[in-house]
Amino acid sequence: MKHIAILTCLNACGVCTGASCLRAWNRRERGFAPYAGEDASLEAFFHCGGCGTDPETDDGMLEKLDRLQSIGVDTVHTGICAVKDRETGELCPAIAKIQEMLRSRGIKTIVGTH
Ligand code: SF4
Ligand code: SF4
Image (cartoon, rainbow, N blue to C red; front, side, top):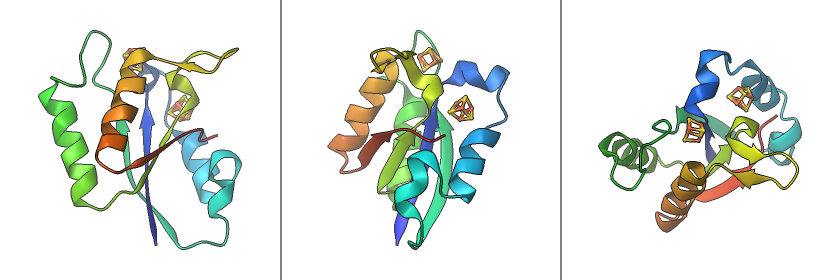
């Protein structure tokens, strides 16, 4: 069984309910289409630590990553709100770093939710 989490931009929380991410998950659409018909569970929905924080020294982020690992999350999907440049697909540097940290813990990273 797959254990999935979603990572998003903290700034987006000011205006976003996460509904589009959850709708895509519930319907196994867009970034989640590969899980259609698969036994997969959405285990967590988390955000970066905010602009100006360094994920590598942010105790809160380290705790979040520990938690994801402890519940067996194997894949983290990053939302479109964490993409800095929609033309090139370049991620916010903080998110790119969090993805590296996830991969170093053996967790797969994918860009795309809805
Ligand atoms: S660091 Fe990047 S992803 Fe996090 S709140 Fe700031 S802009 Fe959003
Ligand atoms: S990807 Fe879209 S729905 Fe998901 S948290 Fe970001 S802005 Fe909200």
